[in-house]
Length: 269
Ligand code: KIV
Image (tube, rainbow, N blue to C red; front, top):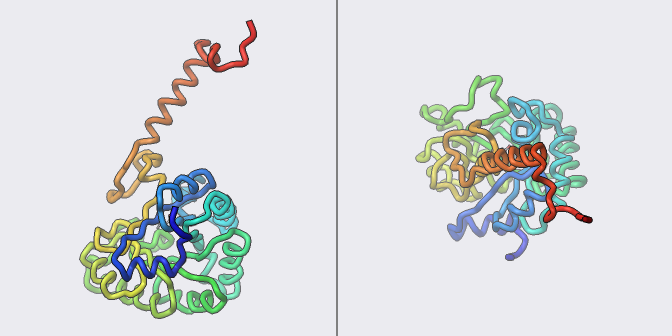
């Protein structure tokens, strides 16, 4: 497999027009498969709250949750760039606390960078993290951490004023020193404009084909989220259905006595 993916490698990919791939992971075994597939960047997203932990939103996710899953993922990979998400209110309260929290994801978790949702309003914190030596990935457009304010998860930037704000947020993050941004759920023409204007990689999710790369929640594309996935998701395999069938089969075979059999036991006649 190719060399370790660094921020510099991603920058070169943007320059040469080579697409960047990114997926979420929350545990070592899934992460090692993601890495084996040749994916560039793994995000331990706060989506872990909805995909694995049974929460309705990402808001209850704690820094301890993300740290726990980041440690697991870092044990399963050696090449991908590992980015850990800063959960709701683990930043934006006090700058010192933001640095301490992000520092734990790097020092204890093994992350190579952190991701923060937000634009102009978090620029001072982004700068402080970078000054402290922690690379930052921005996240603009749809911000699931603002769902209490927006009331739903919907496309951002349809109106001119909204589009201008998403553009301003993206440019401020670049100026502050972010090495890349995630651009979530914006019209593809806006994504194209932002991708062309920015010199840092723009990784899209539900933002059309013109971004420098794409990120997706792995559980969505594997069909593990039981239909609770956004419209833009392409399901590459329906593992949910296959798992259901396998589990029903085990239940049936044990109850009817056809498992264990001679081929699957230390059988002594
Ligand atoms: O938490 C997450 O998984 C994310 C991706 C959807 C980009 O932020």
